[in-house]
Length: 55
Ligand SMILES: [Zn+2]
Image (cartoon, rainbow, N blue to C red; front, side, top):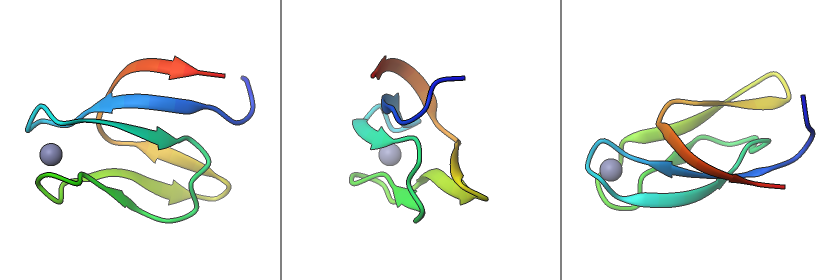
């Protein structure tokens, strides 16, 4: 597993957003307020579709 990373995710509303995979707060879609990522003990659990990742 790699360490910190940025992920490009696509929400079910088709909005694309860049999120950090170690975010310690819940991240919501800026368009529809759907939860894209929630913190789970040190790393983020990604709830949206990941379409790209950046080191
Ligand atoms: Zn959305």
